[in-house]
Each structure stands twice: as structure tokens, then as C-alpha cells.
Image 1 (spheres, rainbow, N blue to C red):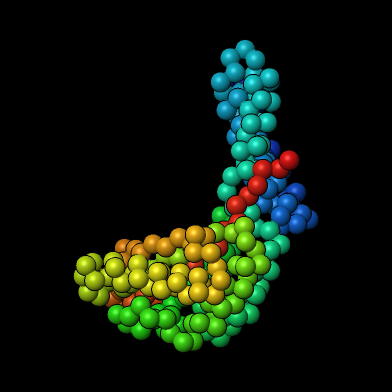
Image 2: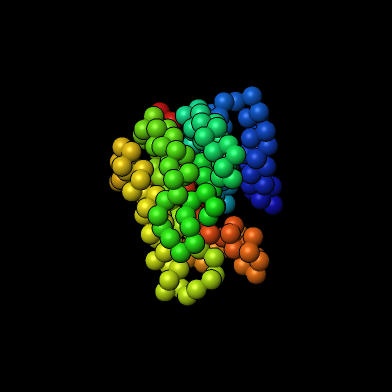
Length: 224
């Protein structure tokens, strides 16, 4: 019973400890938060597998977990914040959404009216200035990776929608590469109509589902 209580206390302390991040920079939050959670979970695992040496195993687990937490996932750095602000400015009034995801990636959501005509994977001229700005910010932060995912509504068959969604992602990738972004940094995928975000039963819902999502991620580095 005492060991179980200690495990619970460690986990609670890890979560509560994140409350102290309020005055930390974005970089510190990304690495410090991961380390705190990793340490708590590592300590808990150590305690549960300790046998008669709970304290020593918990300490070892905390150290290992802290390294895993600091080294895994994505980092929301000052570069990422500046990139988000730059893209918010570049997309103002376009209907393109710019946000920070829960796992610290920059998400750029491009709906159909700002990206491609129905049934087409040719970039709309209005999208190119936005991608120009994105290319510039990517060159300024070369450690990031990019993942582009194409989506369609459910009009038509999978035989049409699946390759169309891939081709839209590929067209976006090609444009960024033409603006100097290393193509090896840019992954692409097409999900067809499998991941709707709105009701395909309405015209407005279908328009929301026809989209391209761009995710920019900076890997968290282990603290030295």
C-alpha cells in the first residue's frame, strides 16, 4: 500500500510541477514539461518494479524517464512562435487557419476555396503568396520537418478521391520545393474522404472537408 501511495504521489507531483511553467519560455515549456512528465512516469515504473528497493528504483526510473521526456516529441521554440505569427499575418483574410497543435506542431489548414478548384490539384493563384511566405519561414528554421496531408469530401468514389488527395499534397510539396525548401523535409499523404471535419451532407460541410493540412514540426532535442 505504501508503495502504491508513493507511485500516485510521484505522478501527481509531475503534473502539478507543470503548473510552474507559467513563467517559462516556450522552449523551456517544451523540454521541461516533457522531462517532468517523463521523470514522473519513469519513477512510477521504477517503484512498481522495485521489489524491496523502491526508493532506488524510483530514482533510477525518474532519471531515465526524464531523458525520454526531454528527448521525445516536438518543441515549440521561439522560431516556431515567430513562424506562427508570420503565417498568421500572411493568411489574414484568406480563410486559412493557423494554429498550434496539442503536440506542439504548427498546423496550417487550407480550405478548398483558398487552395484548389473542385476535382483539380492545380494550385489557385491566391494560395501561392501564402506558400511563398511559408517557404521563407521554413528556410529560416531548417531543423523543422513538414508533413502535407490532402483531403476530399465524399463526392465521387475512392478511386477518384484517394489519388486526388495525394496529388493535392504533392502539388503543394512541389511548389514549396520550387521555392527552395529541401523536398526531403516534406512528407506527403492523401486521406481521400476518410477524415471529414464537417457534415458531408451539406455544401458548406463538403467545402470544409476539401482541404490541405500542412504540419510543421521541430523535434525536441535531449538536454545536455
